[in-house]
Amino acid sequence: MKVNARPESEIFNDLVKLCTRQGFAHVLSFLCMKNNMTRYSSVITVDDLSHIYSPDYLIRNELAILIGLMVSNQVISTLAQYFGKEMVLKSLEAYKDRVSQQLFTTVLNYLNHTKNVA
Image (cartoon, rainbow, N blue to C red):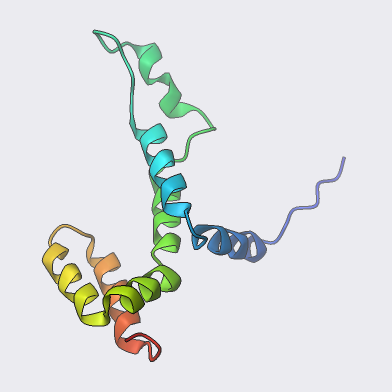
């Protein structure tokens, strides 16, 4: 049976659309909890940790990609339009030491180069 694989760019574009939809932050928070929480009763056993290696779970890099796509231009733009560019910049500055430098730089570059953000 021949499988027709979709081009990587098409899949990525679909992911971008999905990650920027309203409410995706809730889905992402659920995925993070599901992938990073381990339930156990009194003592952790090997079976308690076996879910970490399931193909149904996202690895850290996959979650990071989804987070990056979610906080892409559309989300940043919405925050800036609602709260104002200065408030977003102040918030970023307050959390600068707690977020990755790459995320900080990405958001800052977007805000500085966007004309339609107040």
